[in-house]
Image 1 (cartoon, one colour):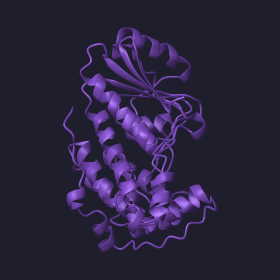
Image 2 (image 1 turned 90 degrees about the horizontal axis):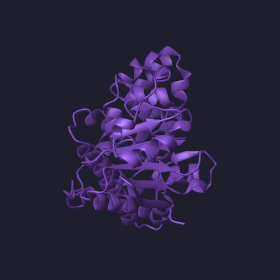
Image 3 (image 1 turned 180 degrees about the vertical axis):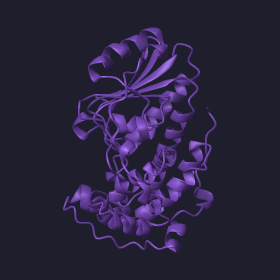
Image 4 (image 1 turned 135 degrees about the horizontal axis):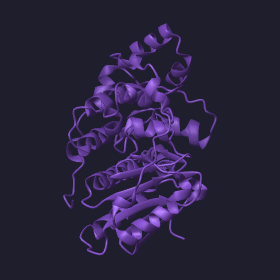
Length: 335
């Protein structure tokens, strides 16, 4: 059975994640398959809209399947990661810029690569089980797949908080932070998908009242500090141990770069600009960051004890985010 189930269903193009045993982790081949399907349906008059959903109750998509990137990086092959990230980001941009409605039904874990698929759809639906996060600083990476764009456009300093800590959002927080649009109980999703496929009309989507959003009441002013060190000092002064705990645990380089990326994305007018900036870090990640050590500690050996060693100083952060020259992402203007 294919990892992505791709088909036309009456007026809808249908994309269904089909790796529930792997929490629907997104592989390079899956990213390419999503992109190819969207290209095929773009000018297809039979397809009025696209529905993206997932098999299994535990996850819409728990992130990117980075095992191949990790193995290649250990062997000194940094092209595997660079190609994966570039192709994934092109797919993310296609979703954002797509000329037809895309409706994403995001249950369970929606993290990293899952946010890159569902978080840029035109109609983003969440339910009671939804847990959305960008936890990349915990593996020595940065919130990519357009994560910096979403974080940069979140209200107040919510973006800095979510990007640095990797905190999870339930449905209310996801809508408040701009990662989702509508809350609908998951028991109603199958009938709604049927209506969408039958009518091809997003007017069938009727959102319920937004659940409570704890983030809306939280004082995140400390995350307005100019540097990670100053943010941590403000949190220590406020006695906010809950926020300090992940900051003490995550990669210093990743957090410093994330802070720069989120704040730069606030001035971006297109998702593509944020994605291009993210690629500058991720293309270098296997060679020049804490990424391999983070993946080892959190995913491979699972000892949860990464030994961060990458330079987190301003000069190295700037070098990680410097233009890639001939390896800068090139956009294919098919949308």
